[in-house]
Image (cartoon, rainbow, N blue to C red):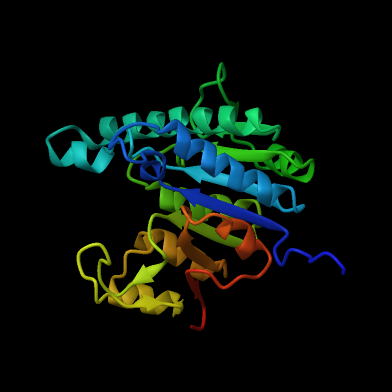
Length: 242
């Protein structure tokens, strides 16, 4: 039997910092990050080029700190540094599985990460390395969702995958409301008009303008990432026409 061919050549995976917490409620759970590294290794092994944008909410949330009285610029700068910590932790876990990885930071932190340079990132991807983009866009006032959409456009990713702790996009919070309905497909405009919490409006609009499809899925499901790469319709797809 002929081996299946991935339907995507290059993907951008967006992971929230909260995805690394596990059951401990704060920081980085070693078992969780090792599980994610294993899922990524399986996917990269199929020949797909994979880049990652990771958040920092498991360590520090800039908007929450700002709401408590901290200056927004200072809070966002701390949040960007938190994403660097997560990126380095994920890099270590990936390299322990044998996957070559590079961290590129949008802020200058040369002792621990390369500067973000699009052409260099593309070369790494073409050589089979996983590239982790840290520090968001390098600017305050922008979320890591926006950074993910921006990087997806810059590296010409075929799709942006958003790994979450739920099965996709629901009409209501499925944790609170057990009658919440899972959407299989949505248009960009449906997401914006309904105020659905897929990604922030700036990120959705960027993906819409640049025709980058988004698939929201449960990263905790074993094999989900690889199944999507081979065409599995897991979670919710967001694109021009639902």
